Length: 109
Ligand code: 2BA
Image 1: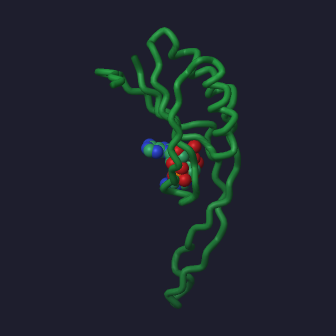
Image 2 (image 1 turned 60 degrees about the vertical axis):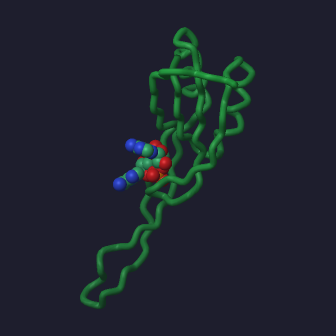
């Protein structure tokens, strides 16, 4: 068994959960925050049998889209004033950032 930890954009989360559930996967949704953008994203925990792993990954790949987002970062100190001026930076946020772990034990009590 494997545990898929998928960090996805909020915009894709609801459709992804529906698609995974309709294909028989169990899903847990966590509300999370990206360290760089400091904005909300969604982390899904999906426990899958080894023979179903590729199927789950395909669903994630199909649903999750890359998008451009604007991050506001402080610029280097402007001149000698010691003032930081916020400026927008465009970043491409994935599709999905996925970690796959081997599950040692799966227990339901
Ligand atoms: P954030 O940390 O908010 O990052 C959002 C996007 O900002 C990233 O998209 C990337 O394109 C960009 N970015 C991140 N750190 C950067 C930096 N130091 N300099 C310039 N640009 C940077 P993704 O790579 O698709 O990541 C989307 C979200 O997945 C991340 O949101 C974070 O919540 C999570 N994530 C990504 N890599 C991770 C990792 N190694 N461990 C844990 N979580 C991760």
